[in-house]
Length: 82
Image (cartoon, rainbow, N blue to C red; front, top):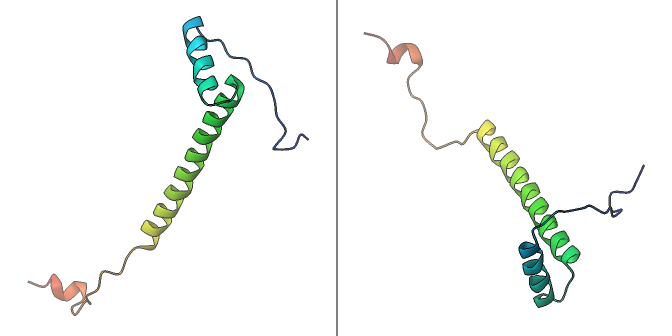
């Protein structure tokens, strides 16, 4: 079974115009197009992980509920008596 940090190549098809812009952008950042794309994809994946973690935490808090103070001095039957 391959290690999780093992690298694997992928192939992309880009228009010539997009490829030229990517070359310029990568050069400005002193990296390769591969390095540029790797960085961006890792950021996207990390942001998605962060979102899912925050979502699970928020749902757990909602399941637990919040005590907002106050107390019940009457039971349900007493409230609904006519």
